[in-house]
Image (tube, rainbow, N blue to C red; front, side, top):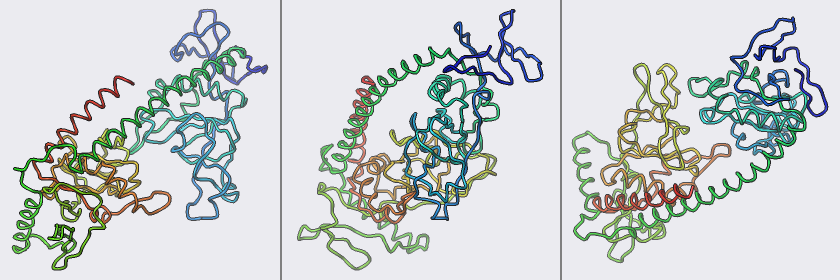
Length: 480
């Protein structure tokens, strides 16, 4: 039956009909009729009707103008990508096209619905948003241009309300990302309410969203408190203020000296090359810190960020990390860890990509092992950092990571807590270069100063951190 929406009757070339046998039918332009009862998700109230999205809108996609043409960018026309699809409304973005760049593109007006059709985030959600200003879109999005723009809010509600079913029915796995089968998605059946109910539904949903938004703000505040509490614990830990020192523990400097002696023997045997950047950091008789590289010593008091216990020592990454190894995928399939594989809030690997070796990205070449710590070189402030356990030890990581491997002086769990500490993350952030994807380098990590406790004390510190974190997380879970 036709549906009255905002005072306009919507007719279409094909529309669902309800027959005398109480089944649902669809009539086509050629007059043929087909029973679609198996497509009907649920029963509707009196006065409602099912309608295909394809009868309510036109569809088109986007593209990316040449990034090498500077005159195309830094203008006033909004350019939307899948990364911008994080909220209901789209009205701002860091990237905007100039008038010249926008001429290559189709521009969409406010109340156009946008849908992400190609992105890794489709595994968890179906990103839909409503434009609030004129905009262009990239190739990962489709524009749903409603014949009646007043329906934008209501159609958005329908699509988000059916999100789980739509994800299951219309998404499919690609080699590296998920995709929406958009040709089929256009045919989705939507429950259309009478006009007076549509307005009421939108009003009720708006009120509900305000309540949910308040809850989300509270959750964000809670998450912020938890993050700050954990950050403080880590700060105390790497300063030697979390666990008591054991005078019987072998000082870290003694362990480092033994490691250096073992390396020297391997160098003499021709099994290892000397790293000219390795150094020895020690306290002189004047209680100042010195760094010795080859035969030259230099006072580095001004580089020491904070005091540490006497049994601890400072060490450059060149000395405390063992360096990285390359490994290319072999066999039929392999597990690939890229940035999307990291849960950067919990600092864990959530799900490596299982890919055919024939589809291996060129960046898949970092070898990992149990106890390695992955530290993202790209946008380090996002803290894509994770400790590799045995489950993921045969994976291959992206070259977008620096792989921290202990040279012997760092207990893997302590190395992990050290690398997620504010001291390391904030310190390395200062070296970022680049505008679109600010990054740090391998040398930035290896030249940084790291506080090294006695090896046995590192284990005690880790046990203490885990105990406190466990209590914090229990409180977080109970409040959420």
